[in-house]
Amino acid sequence: MNHENILDREPALLKQEDRICYFERGYLGVSGLVSRDWLDRLNKVTDEFVLASREVTGNDGRFDLEPNHSSAAPRIRRLNAPVELHELYWEFANSGPFVDIAEDLLGPNFKFHHSKLNFKWADGGEEVKWHQDIQFWPHTNYDVLTLGVYLSDVTETMAPMGVLSASHKGPLFDLYDETGQWTGNIRDVDLPRLDIGSARYITGPAGTVTAHNCRSVHGSAPNSSGRSRPLLLCAYSAADAFPITNLTAGASHSEAMIRGEPARWARFDPRPCLMPPDWSKQGGVKSIFAHQQRED
Image (cartoon, rainbow, N blue to C red):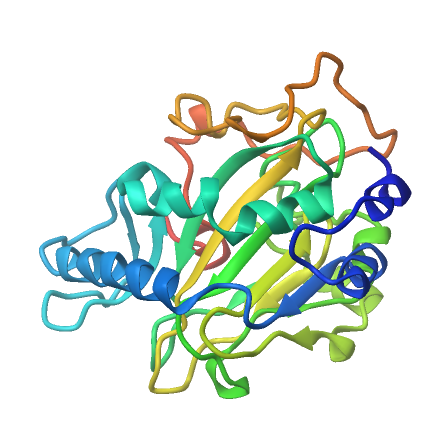
């Protein structure tokens, strides 16, 4: 469904001006869309995973950890695929406010792709360098987006996510370095082509929702504040956008229809997309943090 037809539909949750802003700028930040009840339940389960991480000494299928993580001082970079780890995360992704927001931005037929929970730990949580998402998980078209919810209040000092306005309408960048190694970030030599100084950093109280298109350039600085910044993220796609890698193959909820009908025809965008490495030959998928920090 084209964007004009989506805008002709009555919005389920977002204001019409928010939807127009998303299509023009490639991102949104809207407060007050996730209830206190949802936040309390999500934070309770998330706290349980933080506690469980104290018994873990290295990365496993659940946790991506900072190198200085310890039992006494846990430092989680990411909870991998939370919808696979606890039913509450899937309940939220499948029936929470994200569903109405996704319909407002993708149209009536859309499906789930994947989830993650990035912590941006206090006192040094790692930088996420400027990048675009779709090169990590290419689809047949670009009607793919990521919705996030801040699980706690986020101020300017806490390294909020920054997005470059209208960058989703620009080029896709090479995320391999000059030697052909995948880094997961835009090359330094290409950054002058972007107006990094114009980035909008999305702040707000707990429950603030972020939305960004899969082509939008985004990133965040290290978190030098004394408070962590947990951000639960779920990616959704239009029904006729099909993944062309096996990144999420085997996941129980990958490509699950959330609303509407499955597509019988794939829609192909003529704009090309960079392909990531064959993860099956790379010893499995590593997080964006591990790639950008050049960890073995």
